[in-house]
Image 1 (cartoon, rainbow, N blue to C red):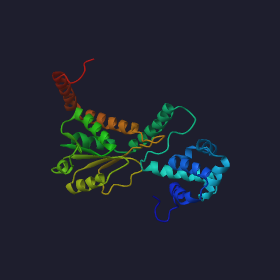
Image 2: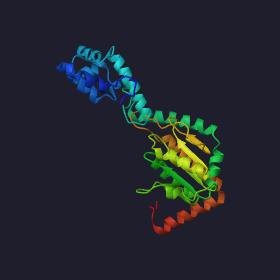
Image 3: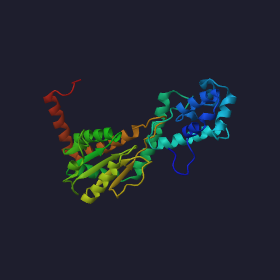
Image 4: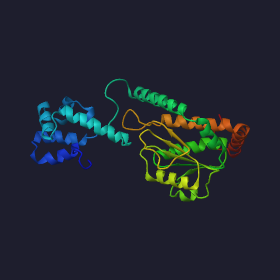
Length: 287
């Protein structure tokens, strides 16, 4: 819903104008309401064709809604869609025309990876790696879309060192995981959009406990509620309706590789011991 003082959205305008619309205009209204989140992707001619109305009816309908023209309504829809996407809401779709969907995604991911490389180059990655490699225990937390990232980071770190846990576990809370941590440990909070309030709450508790924290987040996030030891910002916006985690997973790989290298012989020994345990248990397919 629009906030106080902001102009009404497309659906609100349609609801207000509905009683006075002609049957032909109502056909356009139904199409516009169903496609309010991706209206920017349609030309006026396409709206007319898909709604089964004339181009004149389309123009008249949007003027009834208070727009100067369909072009103005389309521009507003594009702005609204961008605002929603910035919050992680899956709206819109891939750009019309141009190359195929795979090429569009690959090109966008390359751009995200380039931006990530520039950001990581400006950060003190050796200090981040030192924290993850040398901590007594490492706790990795992530909610919603961030949880698979947290789980993957935990699994990669666990190849090189022991005492790495992930949360929240299904049906569990995180208070039990946080209790007992102190300055000898490390907390990794994975908080990509759309974030829950839990991430900020956990950062505050960690600060009170004196636990050094690594925050993995995206450019749309505001500053953390309390200072953190390290903050890595990784772009996740995709070219269409959904976010892309290609750059995020590359960042996870960079961190895990760094920890394995920093652990030296102890890390190599653990990799060997884990592989031996896999063979003993018969857990993995032998190629």
